[in-house]
Amino acid sequence: MKRINLALQGGGAHGAFTWGVLDRILEDDRIEIAAISGTSAGAMNGAALKAGMATGGREGAKENLDWFWEQIGAVKDDALVNWMDAIAPATPMLAAAMAYSPSYAAIDMTTRMLSPYASGALYSNPLTSIVEKFHYDDVCGEQGPELYVGATNVRTGKIKVFSGGDITGDALMASACLPTMFQAVEIDGEAYWDGGYTGNPALFPLFGAGLPSDIVVININPLHRDEIPNDPQSIQNRINEISFNSSLFRELRAINFVKRLILDGTMDQGKMRNVLVHMVSDDVLMNDLNVATKSVANPVVLARLKSAGRTAANRFLEDHFDDLGERDTVDLEAMFSG
Image 1 (cartoon, rainbow, N blue to C red):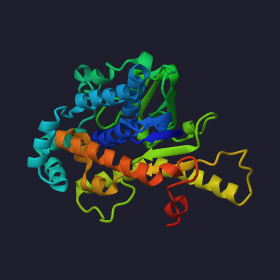
Image 2 (image 1 turned 60 degrees about the horizontal axis):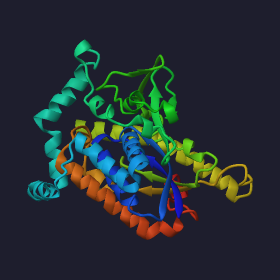
Image 3 (image 1 turned 180 degrees about the vertical axis):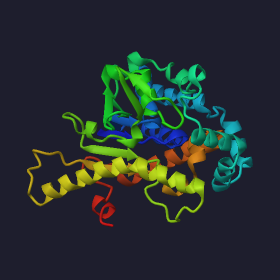
């Protein structure tokens, strides 16, 4: 049995990729998920997995993840999904059509020109009705993996990590609170925005005693894009990706620094953990998507993301299962050499 920690990034509807990764990992009884750190969509995925596992084991976790994404907009009927996928255009064309659609244009214009506080008493976050249905006795219980949810304190700019009984509906909503779209979430007198600004996701909670050394990052924000963005939407999209990856890069750089100290004997390995870093991603697919596909839950895009997540997880398990507990499968030196 291999024990791993999962680090689940946020990225709106692109979190369906993580859904697919988790769906595949849960099918492998050689792997135990010891802990999860999640932000935004990653936090939602983590809470759904943990709550489902508490009552129904691995199958319960898979079913609860399916339920959550059906609430977001995924289609349950496989035959209908296959038909929709067959008649839909290729992913780059579909993403472009969504970016220039009237519905997305309305969302984009509203967030640029109006504060989420402008609607006053009429304000509501559509995620609230879904998050309220989570079973928090199970989300916060001792069964299943440890769960950590990251949010950003608006006043201090520091990360806040919720765990145990502190993981409430408000904590999940805070973790997914994009400030241009939603009002800050108030918890115990403090205001919180999306955790992606300060930890996407936070890795340090996964360094705790009793947890395994392996951290598998499910990355849904492309680390690299070959093309320089040259239109307003693609520029804004790349700014979003860079800002939401920056906190992850900082923690990975710190991990790499500690690993070099251990390797050259400057630091005793017993004093600092030699964290083993892995990553499951599909930058090719994510480069075909954009900020519109993050913001608007399209059933075809969600299905393709889930399928891509399962494929990426399967490839990772085939290529690197034996590496778990033994070595990194991400070359941190190469990542930070440029």
